[in-house]
Length: 389
Length: 159
Figure 1 (spheres, each protein chain N blue to C red):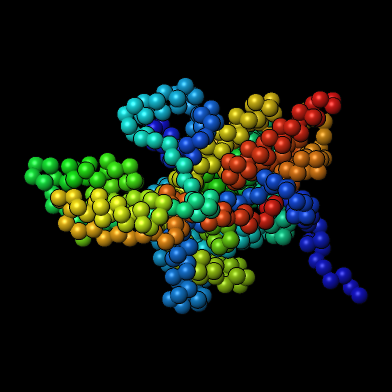
Figure 2: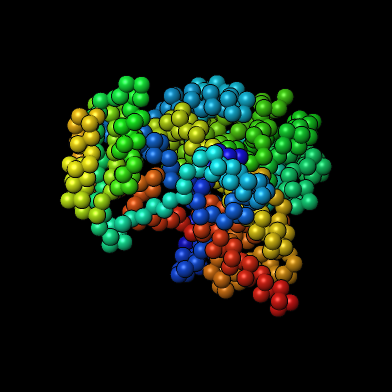
């Protein structure tokens, strides 16, 4: 029989997180700090609007681009929160989570052989999506000494005449790093100089703890070369609703919409109705959840300092990315051993790129009780490691 | 900072103050000072515990009594309210808008004890015109807390 598979798909490695998932789910009393989704339930008033839409029989497709009402609300939201201006009828559409938007953007913008710059450590889907678009992923290593921010120098060094697109994954999963206005200005200059485009994944934009998130698309000369991706999963604790959106210049959005139309048809209708309520009346929920994440973030930072575990202070998302190099183990060894000995699951930094070696990702989308218990076990573990050295 | 402290301790007044200070990103001394000041100013009026007495196996009866009264000249409702809240069996007294004047919440050991209080102490008050006693049959949610079992984390373990 012939090989039924495409050469492209067989080159893609499965996500490194899955391996741990299989071990953890078999283990009793394990505490997982491995989850990348909010621990909060979707606020009730949002869920209720989803339920009401079902009761009213709103169970049909929406238009390909999504409910007009939702797009209008989103345009206002983006203006008031991030000073971004998009025409809801031409410059945005609703997707099945941010993930679909990443895929659609890459397929709409890349030709075979085009190079995509992907700063790492970062979310697991950029490289596979670039490969599926037959482009060439080129990773840029983000460094702890730069607070895991992308620098103009690192960007400049990675650009070739084949470079077409830069992925900007900030606030960042897994490091929690953010990019401030001044950092983005330096990046914008290089991007414009080399005439490349930006895919800005801003899914964690509501989860920044020192200052408001700045979108690179709001900088002069950047709107026309940036696709902004965002969604409801992290800001409104709506992961399971699978809802995101993409915004950008009409020329790009129109082509992305074709992919969406033929692959997806439209985002889930119930989710879209619930999302209207989220954008209209969800600001207070966002503030309350952010405050609680921030309290946990400060607590974890404090505990890591007490333990003497090296960790840069993250100002965004809900992850910490402590360094475990002092123990002379790989991230994978450390995470496996910690799980086996203390039943605490964390994700090895290498799941987010080779340069994540020497780090682990700890999610604080957990109750304080769970965090305290888990941190206690981690402290025991590293104390034992240090004693046995 | 006061609002943040209050918002936190309203849900968990037993928090370790050092931990609270860490979580709020302030000095422990500042938290201690603010708490003391707010206690003194009667912003913080007490630290109570939310108990599911049913589960503890202790019989308790709670009633919400709607009371209509004649307000007194120059005193409004305050005098009659204080006449009612002085009884130790009375848990809460609220002045209410709508169909009646005061909502009185009382807790007793038995139905009989509560009825006795209403008929012998509350109703005979000069200013009390009428009472309507509503017994609580089941507490589903109290002080923002659902009394049933805590919800389970149903997220997949790694993602």
